[in-house]
Amino acid sequence: MTDPQPVTEDVVLEISGLTKSFGQNIVLDGVSLKVRRGETVCLLGPSGSGKSTLLRCVNFLERPDQGAIYLSGERVGLRPGGVVKMTNSELAKARSRIGMVFQHFNLWPHLTVLQNLIEAPIHVQRRRRDEVVAEAEVLLERVGLSSKRDVFPSHLSGGQKQRVGIARALAMRPELLLFDEPTSALDPELVGEVVAVMKVLAEAGSTMLVVTHEMGFARETANEVILMDGGRIVESGPPATFFNTPKTDRARQFLQRYVNG
Amino acid sequence: MSRDFGIVWDHADLLVEGLINTVILSLAGAALALMLGALLAILLMSRNRAVRIPFRGMVDLMRCVPFLMLAYLVYYGLPSFGLNLDNWSAGMFTIVIYNTAYMAEIFRSVWSRLGRESLEAATAFGFQGPRLYIRIIFPQIFLASGPLLGNQLIQIIKDSAFLTIIAVPELTHAASSIQAQYFVPFAAFIVAVLIYWALCLLVEAGVFVVERAAEARR
Image 1: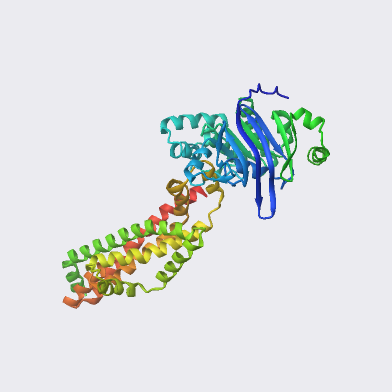
Image 2: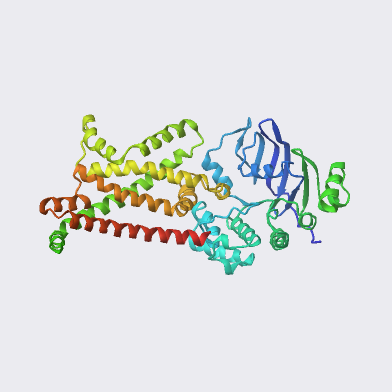
């Protein structure tokens, strides 16, 4: 087990009282949480518990009904009264400060691996091409894919695609990284290579909010573990406490099914 | 017979001028229709019914008008509304509006089969507005539409022959005037047909290039 990161009170993401319904179905029911700089927070929970929706609300792929989201202390998207009043370009600007890694990779199929990394930094963030390319090459080296620089995504394995997905998110120099079940679409033998990259990132002090079913990753790498069920946070705490001495029945049930079962 | 081809050869300059007009009308017309069709496809994909339905109707209507009829309408009909276009402009205008509808329908059908994953990633990475379309959506649509666009370009080249009836000096018009003057129908028309065939081969080569680029990404 690695040592927990030194954590300051520097809050990168704060979510407060977030609610979201799809029709009659309440998916998020007043969720609040904080992610501090350099921290890895894992969101666990059965499918349908609202954890992916919560993640997608953070960068407004879903529009929350009520509540507030603060990015480095600055309120994003929702104005008092709970109405989304942000223009599309304001939303896009906020989104470009957050990196996202998707369950199904969502790479751009018409672009090579390197082009996938540099596309948004150049065309959204308007950074200089030579600087972005140099940085992207370092990132590809970090995820062990320098040799795939000029290959199209369709020629990569699932694990390689997801490592490109992670490098693409990092190329945005994000303040916060969101992972939406990054290993759920992978063949079991490919999960390890992706988890290894995520661990290195966490240990290097990236700020990460991770929806996952990889209990090993949560136990060994997270600073905080949050269990969601029915659109609410059921229990949260450091992984050592959560996995060894869960406080709620719901957490004990969950752990029995997903860890032991 | 060889004397007939000799006569056609003597008037090669007419055919070349016709060919140049056919190429300009087809290529420039296709390029304009491509761009306008892309814009129209955005409207056809709109989630807002009040936007989508009227444009859907316009596209369906345009695709059901015979090209020749549209050329007549533009050249002979529009002057009643005070819009007088010369032969060449009327021909170009007809090609562009007719094919904008077809291009839009090609793009719409390919677009609706595009996975939403890459669009979602683009949104999450801060793409929006024109840059989203130019950098992410249309390159994928274009790569996936190679053969359809090729067919349409061939159709445009062949349709441009109809413009002889409004006296646009394109290839068919040139062949027709040579045969009318010297009565060499077979030689004049078969030469024109061979030139059309050569143009189609060039289009096929273009489709091959796009398809190879698409194949590399599949």
